[in-house]
Length: 78
Image 1 (cartoon, rainbow, N blue to C red):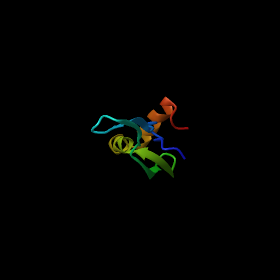
Image 2 (image 1 turned 90 degrees about the vertical axis):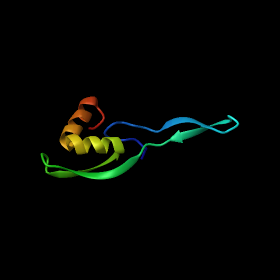
Image 3 (image 1 turned 120 degrees about the vertical axis):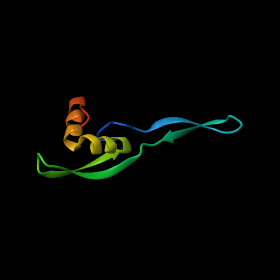
């Protein structure tokens, strides 16, 4: 499984480690992901999603149904 948020589509980014002598080596900025179960009352079922911290905050604010509806409109969720 890849490290991609299933709601926002966030992925790992790449950049440089820069030392004091300004030597540059490649590094990876991973996404802050967590696996979480959500209950959808309209469908009367539980779903498990890998979501980023930002997606979790938006789910807490708007609700899982509204966030899933937006993600389906953008084509991120089936």
